[in-house]
Length: 154
Length: 462
Image (cartoon, rainbow over all chains, first blue to last red; front, side, top):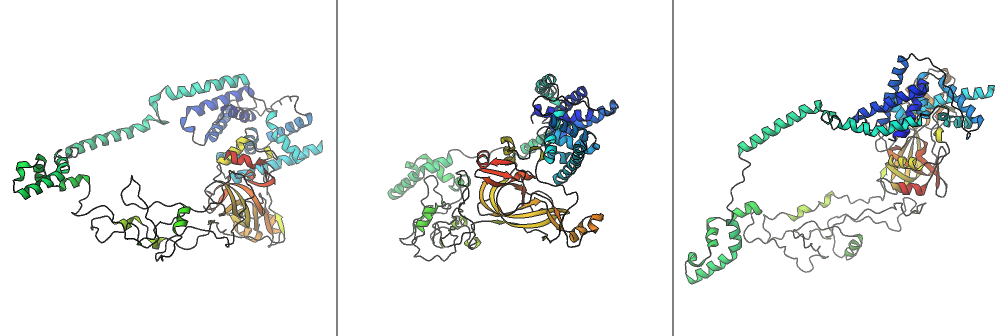
């Protein structure tokens, strides 16, 4: 497991839930520390599942502790390599994602922000690969419809 | 619009903040040290990842059993070796010939044997020679010679196998190379009453089961190979080491080394294995086909649609595969597993890149998606939706999938370990569209979601 890559992925997962950079960093680091405390987690073939289960529980704890209100996360500023139109599309898509129901947002976040494989997400949710794949496609279809509606209205 | 959405989806991570690189690097640099600290700070608390409190009872029980076992062993006296006079057997063996000669000479001259015989002869009389056999081998009857009597001239039609110098015991003859077998079987003047298994030979007149010319002539590809000859060298019904009438009954029967010829299947074996399975249901596609609502199973990974597979992805795909083959789709059946539509493909393998199949083998692959007749679907699933009530009973529901048609493909497969799928069947190694490729142009192959790979890379990384 590439810790550097996973750190970024877990951080994206946390910030999509917590909407706060500092808290997301803290939770990400706490996730890795707890993961490494348990040697039985490693080399078990379920490292990703353990990692995101810990991260999810910590995010829930943090959310409850601070009685978070769903603040709008300020968008990152685009760098020069991205066209403005593409950047707007991404911001639009992110706002659609933020308005999804909790479980659907979680699944899409895991898949497309943290780049967790469908197989690992399916194991996290205790469903088959096919079932999870269909669920992802269904959510994407919903997001695509809303995306097109917004594009059409502009 | 769909491409725009996909592009936005792919770039979605960029609109989220990135972790602070300084803080991230500092944390990750500390991680190995912390890992060591956890591992070695309290080494007694963990043993192989398990807390010692779980290991202690097992260690205590093992120690008690060990002590008890040693005590029983010592009390029984079994640890003491049996007494064996050290010089008797050696002296008997060394002086056997000399004492016999001496006694013969003394008998002939009438002198007392004790007067001139060496001391070893006296010991031989005190200790019977059978005592050596208890330690050095079975009792051999007098007069038995372990040397095999050669057969009379013309008794064997071929030369017997020359035993090697290291192995003087009569063992099963080694299998010969195909060239040897063919030359030795040539003088077939002697009838062979015992049906022995012949090496599988494909004559030029036999119709080929598959196209013998592989489409890709890469040197790394396994060519179809004939099974090794299993013929045993002796052409007659008697093995070369058959016991003669003069052999004593105590001699171990050398025929025990040979497999009974009755057990060998002499029927002509095809040069391939048929590993296909039969689908439980077979659905035909009627004229009126409607898509299943919420039918969103589409091939393709939206994140990397149309991209070439990276080397890392290809390695992972190869590692996940039990079988990588170039194969022709010969049959296609629409079936179902529980309420999900599946398609069974029967493949005829052209070339094996990885796995334990051979070219010419026929296998079955289960692919997600297909067609189910509506009236059948009504019986197995909840179709109370008004959508279905508007449809004619003979309608076919279409469940989208990867949709493999006939032709040659490169498959990355693994053994099906899914419930309700026959265990002999295969499924896609990665369960998505990047496990099946059709030839796009020369060395380039493309999957259903237009992800490409080079065949030469598959050979390189397999």
